Length: 203
Image (tube, rainbow, N blue to C red; front, side, top):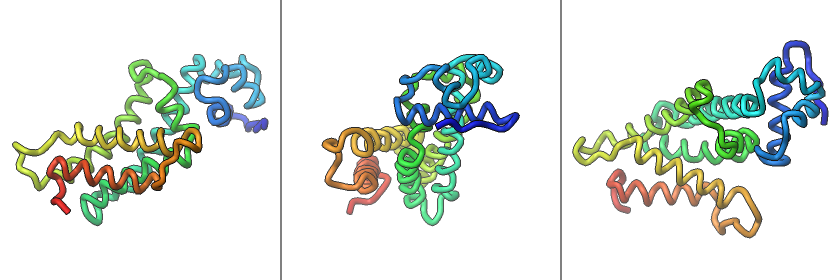
């Protein structure tokens, strides 16, 4: 569907068109010319705003990380009501983001973009990772420093677990679905992992 655009809004119209195409065909499944056509502009007009296809995809991904970071910060809620509840909320926020923003999610994680080539994208992605690291840091404060695992390490493990639940049990073919809701899978996995690190008492 052609969206059209108001003067000065072409850049965002191209981003929106790219999002639709990503959902339909995947992040590698369309050309810059097809994005221009979907936005109802000429291919030449695209180059007034983006240097090329990767530049457009980087802006889609940057906007995705911006939304993602805001959702993670809202879920974390300054570590309230407890450090554990806040940490688990960030995991649920990851799943909610992947479900609600599939185009952004794919641009962020499946487009093969280089962060080194797109500093704005790298900065926004670091903000999102920082929320989870902050939650991990707070969760481990009660442990002696000599026994405390690096927050960046175990937050990365939780990120990987969240990503795995999305990829294996929220997307793909119906046959790949779990008998358990994705949120339950992730919450149980987080609990087992944190107990294994000694961050939670045994049940």
